[in-house]
Amino acid sequence: MPAGVLGPLSATSSAAPRSSLGSRTRRWTVAALAAAQVVAAVVASVLGGGRPGGTGGSDLLITPAGYAFAIWGLVVAGCLAYAAYQLPAGRGDEPPYRRVAWPLAGVMAGFAAWLVVAATGPVWATAAIFAVMLALLVLAYDTGLRHRRLMRLPGRVLLLGTLGVYTGWAAVAVPVNVASALAEAGLPSSGGGAAAWQAGVLLVALGAGAAVVRRWRARAASTLAAVWALMAVAFGAGARDGGALLASAAAVGAVALLGWAVWSRWEDLRRRLQAATLRVGGPGGPFGPGGPGAPGGPFGPRP
Image (cartoon, rainbow, N blue to C red; front, top):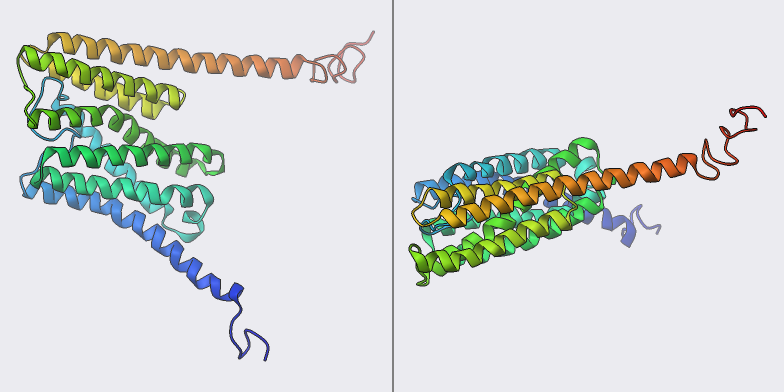
């Protein structure tokens, strides 16, 4: 009996429902975890949890100033907006969004867990969760950037903007979160000894910020988020006794990163302009030898 009439379905025809189920699962998982970040923030607040700043534990000299944690509102709102954008099947099944979905889902699940653990668990656990989140963010951001030309403009802005801010902030915040775990383990949180070892952590955070600028070629979202985090460290350290030198170092580092990023973008633009000029005026170009605008060409000056 012919397959697919009254007989058994072929392997090809039976694969479609499984694919459709996988698509729905992926898209709704992203949407559910984006909402779970909001729910977790409420639960952590009810439980008396820590501030969602990526530090956990008590304040150190290098704990960012309180205003900086408002960046989480931008991150969570971006995740919600992107989750809604990718939810329709025809859009969420496009290759760029499909490939980013599971790393991003892992990040959002990690943040929800971070909030609850910050309220109820040890600081070292929050540091471990945040480190895993950063690894997944790097994977998701790299994947999104590789496929950005396949995205529509709204999706590109929502996805890459959110991932850029998330990754730039996390790159600097993870070392500070680790510092909180070290303080909980017994290292001094104030005084001369505290300034010495926290200076080492600040150097790691500055190196992470430099890696953000270099790896992603000074992209605005990730660069500005890293600079935001470093300036928040500067303001936080400056407001605490014994933190003046750390504040100066963080501020100088943030300004240097921003200057490097601006210079890098300018150099990139200059190289592109030079390449475009060579294409136009080079051999075979519109105004180069043999081109239509060259002497003797159909649009060039007559001999």
